[in-house]
Length: 117
Image (tube, rainbow, N blue to C red; front, side, top):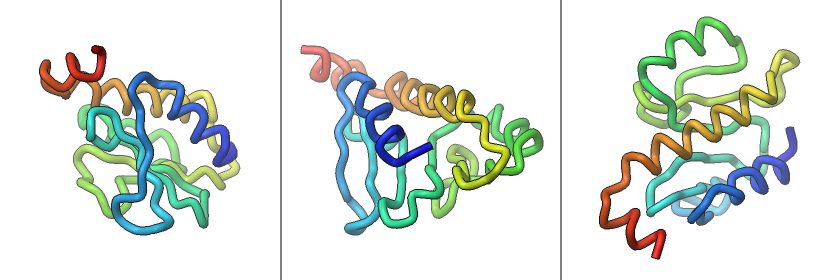
């Protein structure tokens, strides 16, 4: 999965912005000012996503290319190593969609209304 595909997929979700809030290589995708996806533009071999805490253990046990979020809250974030031979790209796209949905659903009504108007 290429950087361009990850970026174009993330930008297809409504109201998404991208920025470099931490340094010049960590690209962060946000909705309503909240992060849902991070990728290092230099290495591009992994992405970090928000995930449902109830699903994280199942994902970790089932997929050796998924680990707890690198430099993130281990309860809510996962890292997907895209350079693994076993990567399921359909699952990657689903997890990206889930991450966006989790963050969007957590936005306040005020923020959602501002985005949608």
